[in-house]
Length: 189
Image (cartoon, rainbow, N blue to C red):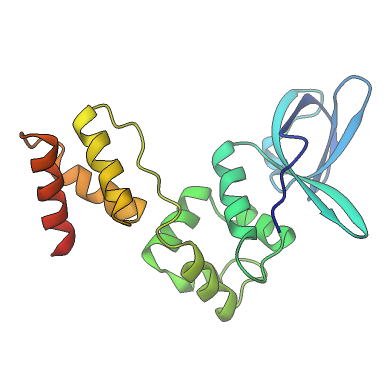
């Protein structure tokens, strides 16, 4: 099941909020959005909330996030078998996106078990399904390193592995082919 949200974000004024929702006034329409960070809101202040539209047989609802990083993590969390949008939102309300990503990438099951609604089985499933898929190789300015990154992706290496090896070879000299060989040698160890 793949859900493309029709509403990517909502920009408007905070009309009201509660523990798990915000009501955003866009001028002539008020959107009720499931939102778990009420401490970050102020009444009558402008806000931009990135949204995920969840469509079920008996309900259509919006889930909101202050950053694209939170939104992206939410979408990945709900891709995990047995993990729905409410539990994914609860996880994001209990910890920062960075700490959740770190816990998943390091296989910290104890951290994940402490999240609301997550038991041993779900914590293990989250780590199994998402480990290595959350770290992106970002902001590579060296053209050779971009080529090395692309080559390693083609060989099937995970983004976290690529990011780590690029840090080790970023100051190395040599052709793209030589850098790919050095990266592969480090990855094989």
